[in-house]
Image 1 (tube, helix red, strand yellow):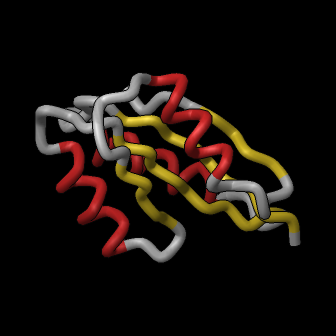
Image 2 (cartoon, rainbow, N blue to C red; image 1 turned 180 degrees about the vertical axis):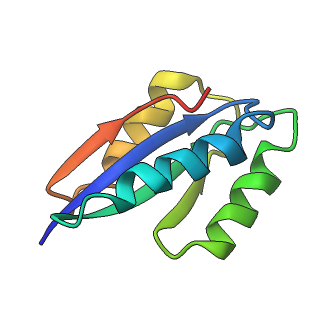
Length: 97
């Protein structure tokens, strides 16, 4: 089975994260041809995004978080996520806002 990583850069997304994650999981669960895993890359938000992502990852085995040490920006988060996703057959990048 092919492994697909969904790469989600996050910066100050607390208002939409839970709903986005719920809808994304519903959509991914409809496809049994691939194994989907979700990677949140957190770019040091000033809101509660980090806590929300940690909670989502604790409750969902198909989810993990990469937390940047400082505010680097959207493109650096994507680069870090790609570097962290080398063992996947494909990577899909999306925004979660």
